[in-house]
Amino acid sequence: MLIDLHAHSNASDGTDSPAALVASGVAAGLDVLAITDHDTFGGWDEARAAAENAPLELVRGVEVSCRLGSYGVHLLAFGVDRDDPALGAELARIRSGRVGRVPAIVRALRPYGVELEVDEIGGGESPGRPHVADALVAGGYAESRQDAFARWLEPGKPGYVTRYAPEPMDMIRLVAAAGGVSVLAHPRGRDSAPVISDQVIADLAEAGLAGLEVDHHDHPPKVREALRTLANRLGLVVTGSSDYHGSGKVDHDLGSERTDPDQYRRLFER
Ligand code: AMP
Ligand code: FE
Ligand code: FE
Ligand code: ZN
Figure 1 (tube, rainbow, N blue to C red):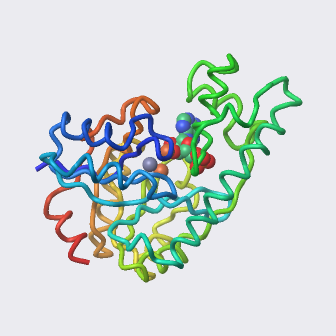
Figure 2 (figure 1 turned 60 degrees about the vertical axis):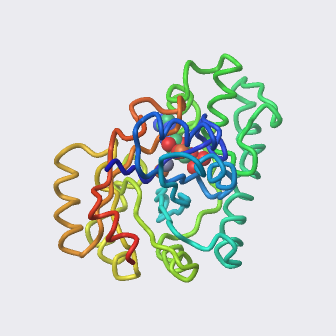
């Protein structure tokens, strides 16, 4: 049984449409696929329609952009009522921070000779730095998304602009109140590693965190081992997932990292 619990469509910064994402999941032989766009359920209706007659179980998720100190921390939420008013309002607040950041990035890049227009940047209701990166590539200011981040968009580079993000502790509670479960995405990945200590994970578990995304491309073997041990000690579910972004991220093919069926069952019992 192949279970992949973290994938993006072009409702956020993936490159497949939601229907194409489902088709890619089928082609990859997945039995379970979660659509987890950044801060939006905008891809859900199309994906669900595409999954209706597909040999695959589609899970509704969302990857919420949180922040702890000055570090980005991503929380995967599954099984929430997407009409929950409190959660909906918070996601809308995050998206509005994303939309407002786009012109701020464009302005910040101008003094460096980068002539981008706001309407050249895609992303719909949940635009992210990857959409700015695509526009930078199209304008000849970078070779690839990765290169655009390295030159312009990482912290410390001219186009890095912060935006609103809630604390993971508060988001875990909102997700629980909306009937869902939370899994900490790539806890020791590039963005979160400096702030996600064992103690912080224990505190989040205390607040109701259900699982840790242990098997993720950003985690080398030693890190996975340590996180698995910690998850077992804290009674957290262990997940694994590709964090697929279509052609927007290399080495993140659907099914390249997977969740064990027993762990999947445990997660959805909660
Ligand atoms: P945002 O939430 O809009 O600030 O952008 C975060 C997204 O950018 C995440 O989906 C990451 O996958 C992607 N990202 C962050 N850093 C990099 C990087 N150095 N190279 C490529 N993609 C990145
Ligand atoms: Fe992303
Ligand atoms: Fe993420
Ligand atoms: Zn992701």
